[in-house]
Amino acid sequence: MKTYGWRFSLGCLLLLILANISGGYSECTDWCVARSEASDAVIQKSLDWVCNYGPIACTRIQPGQPCYRPNDLRGVASAAFNDYWQLVKHSPGALCDIFGAASLVHQDPSHDNCPFSCKP
Image 1 (cartoon, rainbow, N blue to C red):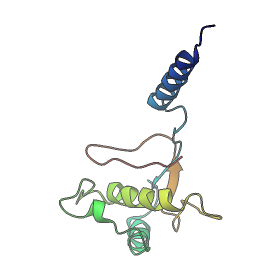
Image 2 (tube, rainbow, N blue to C red):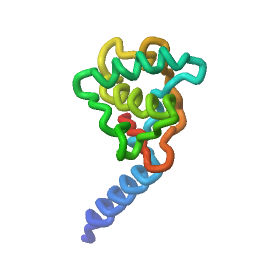
Image 3 (cartoon, rainbow, N blue to C red):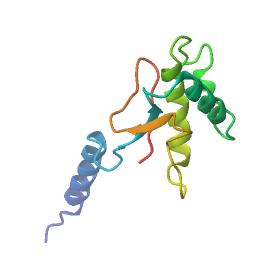
């Protein structure tokens, strides 16, 4: 009697690897970014609030860090808004809106050396 257990196990392992490479099981679908129609004042107020929110230290948007862009308020705010959103999105009643300054997008907004995290 032949045993094929190792072949089955190897096949399952390959399927899991392929699913992860293609994003099958951990695909993310939402990122929180600054709204293009929000005023600079609203974005700044929201950014200040997010950066003072407990675990969000906004270190990634400080000078010398990968998401620092001194002349791009929306880009900097988007990085911070998304860090906040990824932390709270599974909490009851969580919203990306952040005082009307942000909204969800469904395409990864990562750019240059500034990756936007996403938790499924």
